[in-house]
Length: 258
Length: 355
Image (cartoon, rainbow over all chains, first blue to last red; front, top):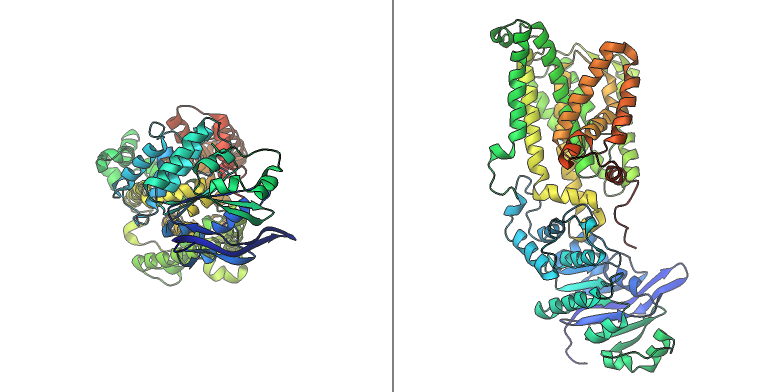
């Protein structure tokens, strides 16, 4: 454990809902250029932890440090400018705008031309090109002019990923990107995430329910249960961890490592 | 998509409108037997009367455009919008009548008051949303209405009688130089329209649309949405104030009804009838509302508002996209339109919220 390049870490992060500690004294470190997954059974506090890291919720105590800065004190709209992109479990797009405009808005926010009130947006340097590139990357090039609400659920998830990618963040926070997707669409999206992470030398923090996805693709896995960190390590270590098997699967299933 | 279009082809519609409206008084003049020279010298009776109606429509359209920017484009449902209009109208009247200021100084004051008001509305922006924002704006506008109506202010505002006897600057006096006033009002409307079109399609305007669509998402994309809303508030406030100045300059009496909620609703109705967030809808809507009102008043005198009310309700029920919106879509699309209206009024969410 020497000389790790840590991009984001949490210190004793705790959040109470009433008397219940949804996240209890969690300290994790996320290394640069890795795909770090957080897994755990329902109600383990994964999403709460995610919301604490991404600033949707304020912690009861503890803090989140991203590149030396405390994220918990930052307004939401500043995060993206620090290289943090995030997506949520529930699809969150602009339903009446075209896929292209959805992505374009995401790209525009980084360019500093936001208050040129008489400018033609297509003349912002690199903004349209970037949007088309991202749409190609996530495979929505042909559907660029379709309003967000008319896209299939899987395409909406891809669009959401495109909106996160457009500003070119260093750290991607993804909360169950495959939630509600049809089975055959899942590998496609995961491959995409993996490719983005590897090619762009980005860091991905992934909260995931789908075990197979995580086991095959993550570099590091943190297992949570009852708001605490149960185990952390490489997929193989986690799969062989007796404690994890009992907690996560109630000892009923074997974790299938492909 | 409209990358290399020239100014002319981009604004073809409004420029045709400008040309038609400029020629119209002269053509009307021919029908009543006064030649163009007579119309030019403001001698035609009927053409002068029509110019007056035109001026009122242009003022309504400018007001509705500013309301549409707030409500239709950015999704801020304000019930106090008429305050911008009324404050400008009364400030102009009082400055001209009680202080005898020249018009250019009045205009400077109006710029000031519109900025102050926009910031007054903006103070509450980061704190309240949706219906609460609507109610707060209503409260602020009502406050101004009460001040205008109070008997302590009778010396300045004329209270419920209205502000009378405002001296009009000679070069734009609507009774003598009616045609000139008409052209000025028309040009202001066209300029506001072109500026609005440009603004809404600018990077700033696009963000405003995204705020309407899903504000929390816009924030997550890295936009400080409050600043964008303040910018829109400033533009809308200033535009509505211009309409207010024109109103005072044109009308013989500044009636306190313009400070009432009813006037904001007129703006809302114009937008709904013309078509939400279409800009040209505000102009079309203003024509429809004013002309329908005049026609019905001619037929049934004071009971006209009852009928117009029913007509509007039925119209909005069956043409939710408004005239321009329906034309653009090529159909009424009632069901889809209602979905859109419910979303706009904050009664239904297009996308589930996070958490």
